[in-house]
Image (cartoon, rainbow, N blue to C red):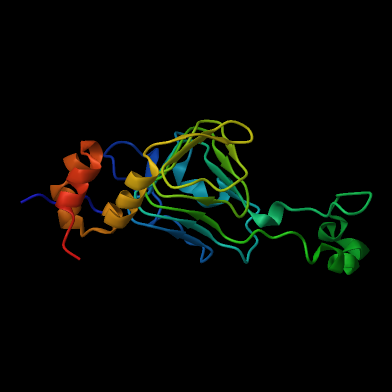
Length: 213
């Protein structure tokens, strides 16, 4: 009987410490990652929370869905990176200590775009950067080196700096059908049985394999 992959192991590929599953890795209550989403980095993939989620002082969250693939150097810039821009200087004096800290009120009310949310089955190319508050749809592809400043639609392919929509992987009707199927929410046993359909089948094939609602 086919056996699903174990979503709780840290290193899913034997002999490849550069690949980590993020759900069993992350500890921050501000980061939520779905099962099987992974990060690949030859230097230290286990340092994802500190090296790849930057300026995360809260309270906004980073939410990543299931079955996402994050290439080396994928980074999420969080709202803590914001500075005041309405005065002569953008320098954050109150954070440096001393009597400057008495002016911490100058850092309140900075722009906050809210949570950064990534759907299921998204693929991030090498060195992609996502700015605060961006929402990336299910099945999206983020090109290598992209700087994502705006929301990405479901099954959209974006690239560049700033990232622009290159095309969508499916037409609107098929995107709606794929979202209705939502294969990433299927039971693990059914996903295991239908791996070939999920990876190389048609939308109709997926619909035929879907569990009854």
